Image (cartoon, rainbow, N blue to C red; front, side):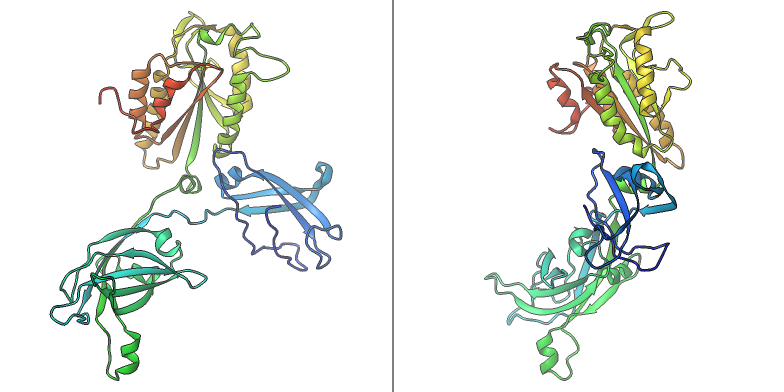
Length: 438
């Protein structure tokens, strides 16, 4: 059990205030089950004393992709719970909403030095829920200046205010001392919400206050003024932002039909169709496809093949539709891809070489066309299933680099027991992947 809601009494259409927090992993199928009970006591929800009103199962991916999911409730043994439904609304918890750029200055600060002017610097603290303070940023020291202008700086919104605009911030101005015994000049409290008034050509300023002086001095006004000259918000969009913003995922699978896979009629072949269990290609296809299909609204997947001789002329092709419909290479769901794959095998001749650049370029052209539209509302995922070393490595690197600027991701899955060491260069983990041409 992940969590449970509060009990809402005497209501057939309850709206629960409880928020369920669930970790989200795009690469996994995360199944959830929601159960609704009629509570009859204080012993706890879901006990034997409570009446089961119905349940519903779905995946986190489905909720994220649709943002609002309404499904019927089912009783045990798969019977509908009357007309009862449950609605789940998803929202990403702000944890990485980008960063903010701030530019501060001060005016007429108190002079703490005897023979020269103060050497001020500014510190910003975030006040957490337990009232503890976390240092967010410390500016550079501006020497011998009572009206310093500090260099603009960038800080993540998560660090600054835990992505909560109303969270209190404490800002402190000090006079630098080389021995570490800095002299306190003053402080002020604010929030990120208040800081945002400095966006555009506006400025926000605060009195820099020394609480001791305020108590002791009757006419004390402040120990200077701190001014926020400029504030710029730089939003870093996550994958969830794109999905929840209405971006549609277009999924394409490309299957290696080269001769190195072995004769499909032979049980040792990676393409052998065993009536009792899926082969390695089908296992990989289903494992990745079931994750991606939750984000594809029409559940239609393009399915391509490469490295085979295809009818009617039996010429080698490196980007053919496995349903043999060049005008519409889409299949209905993962099951449709599986069926097209199985019916395709007897009609083709496995050949070679293992060239994947043509398929990458083909999908990239579609992605490029989409990017040129005003909406640019589609994102493309290409899954390449192959059993061995890519023959056209230079062309593949070039194609991947060109595609890196497009709304497109490439997943390469090695099938079988071949040595895939050379393929690791394509993931860019050891540095940015570069074109052979530089």
